[in-house]
Image 1: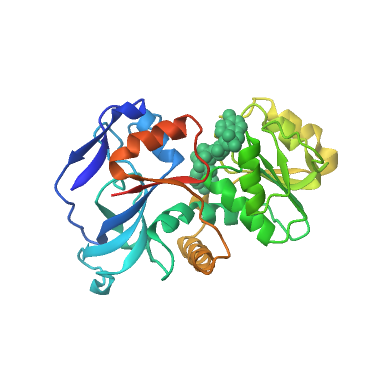
Image 2: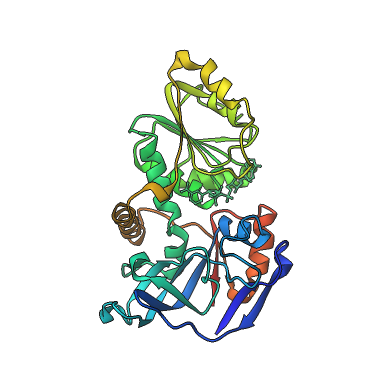
Length: 319
Ligand SMILES: NC(=O)c1ccc[n+]([C@@H]2O[C@H](COP(=O)([O-])OP(=O)(O)OC[C@H]3O[C@@H](n4cnc5c(N)ncnc54)[C@H](OP(=O)(O)O)[C@@H]3O)[C@@H](O)[C@H]2O)c1
């Protein structure tokens, strides 16, 4: 079968297309003939070698989310899975392939009416956005800011906050064109990356921060009294070392800061939210934002564009 491997860590040029034997599912696993493969930010980190070691060496096949048809099951797996259309989390790799393996615990049946490309686009990012808003105790009528809204998590956080009855859904983004697309998803205020913009709300009850980095204290300061900031990602790196001082200096406003990782959410709860969101998407109530679908062989192009920031939503590879 055809796969994309990381021949050498670093630039997207290190990704190569090659042929290897199709994998055979082990105990508790299924094999999936992939129809669509999600390209995530973590794949780019793995490709750069940022998290090399811990079982990730050169020769690694990246890709952690696929959708397709179960073609074979390993020992102990219910054979009725064979032939079913599923979404699968494949862990830290193995996804950029015509055939992928996944633990049966990590697969979910796709509803009729949801395409494989939409499934890997909503995939886990919709679930992350849902639980991040829940972690922030978001309630209807509140003002929300999604910092880094144009990414796969952000486009879902915007839609979920709007659907959840937010009074305002402000977004940071780098262009007016992206701002217009975010408005179509439910954003009410489009701000630049510094958080400035016409009629920007004066304070936010909730900030979902996917960016972190040096500007994080300035955004923390934009919280309204009793406001909650939840850090979901660190696209721009860590905040300055004195971020703690900023937090304490604003204690008279009773502000809260929290981190959030979907890894802390129990698997049955994650699965329930994913199934609920996929049903909503197949009814047209939620939108999967596919930036572009490319052939599997073009994985390096998808990575190059991601490195250049040229992605709104998610790239999908089609084998
Ligand atoms: N918490 C969890 O459970 C969880 C799960 C999965 C991933 N993550 C984390 O989430 C992050 C990736 O999320 P994603 O894929 O949605 O994001 P992304 O696509 O990497 O970035 C989102 C947006 O941020 C903006 N941006 C990029 N660089 C920036 C900078 N230096 N300053 C300000 N804005 C910048 C860009 O939009 P504009 O150009 O429009 O500004 C970009 O589209 C990673 O940190 C990953 O580790 C967390």
